[in-house]
Amino acid sequence: MTNYNSNEFNITPAVIRNVLWGIGAVIVVTISMAFIRPWYNVWSQEMEGKAEFAKAEQNRKIKIEEARANLEAEKLNAQAEIERAKGAAEAIRIENGSITPTYIQYLWVRQQSDLSNKTVIYVPTETNLPILESTRMNNLFQNRDSNQ
Image 1: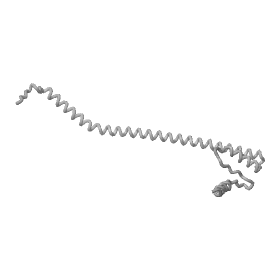
Image 2 (image 1 turned 180 degrees about the vertical axis):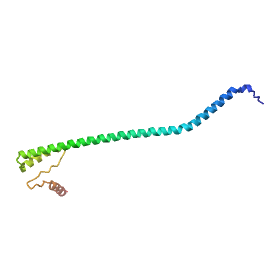
Image 3 (image 1 turned 30 degrees about the vertical axis):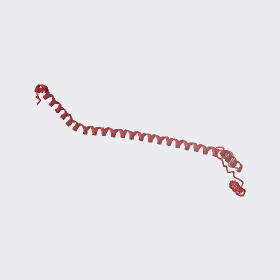
Image 4 (image 1 turned 120 degrees about the horizontal axis):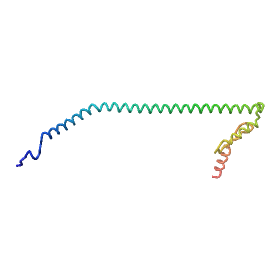
């Protein structure tokens, strides 16, 4: 049989007091966390709300600036259109208000230079009807069918 001597464990009142203080400290920390944690959660949510509000405010300012830029662009486009109309009116005035069919054809041809990568151009005729290439395609199909 083993003999348990008190000298092996050496339990003194100071050790018991320190153990009790440690247990008491753990209990105090646990209880204080039970009260502190809800306060922390409220504070954390308040900070998240402030951050979201600041982000929404920034997004609103960005949209306002974009709207101002669009308004300014529209004003400039309107001014450009007014200037273009003034130029056209001045050109008509210079021509004494008479626009000839030849001048209209010249304007139409000049406009065609702005087109890029266009493969089909319809040319107006005397009757103001375009020349269509449908008959050419029809002839191609008839020739192909007759060769087979």
